[in-house]
Amino acid sequence: MKNNIWENMIKPIVVLVVICIVASAALAATNEVTAPIIAQQQAAAANAAYLEVLPEADGFEEVTDFQTSNVTKVLKATNGAGWVIQSYGKGFGGDVPVVVAFDDAGTILKVKFMENSETAGYGQKLADANDADGQKLAQSFEGQSGTLEASDVDLIGGVTVSSKAALAAVNAAVNCFNEVALGQEATVEVDTSALTPEEVRAMLAPGATLTQIEAQE
Image (cartoon, rainbow, N blue to C red):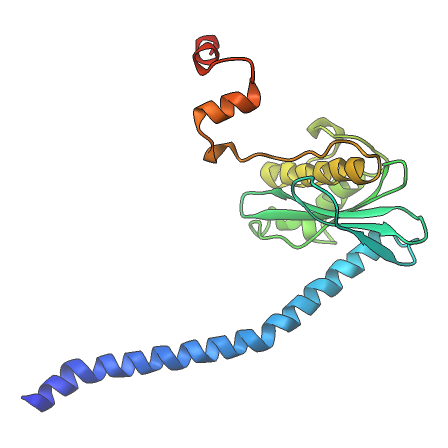
């Protein structure tokens, strides 16, 4: 009876536990080895993108004192060639990152879409260097300045969410440029989902009560 219990019940459990422990250790070891390599590759791709959008720069000085939302990196060319800002918008499958180059007046020189987690065949069209629609959208930003509307650029048909996420990302870069280069007030998004109705009211209409707002709806 004892042998049957060991063979039929205890032994399979022990084997599964050992397999899980070995597999977890192998995954941890693999991650420890590959994580730095992946980080280096991502950094190299980002640096290449910075020089691609602003090839006149001979180097960059990073600016860390900014408050604008959805911006991950701000770089100023050390030779005065312009600025490069990396930002992102919220797409259907995740963040849609872009790298935007500006001249000192705030005119967009070039936009590059980075790899994203959007659905293959849709949002990935943005990051595909050979995709005509993605390149057309990127080029439609060039020469423009200030906050842009959907009608100002060539959004990709059938890829509305990803296209608008790209537009939001570029506008985040524009807002950040205005903050760091022109001294304008930072644009900071507030997540209202975590706020109470009274907190939302205080933020949007400081002089009104929640009852007055509801009465106007």
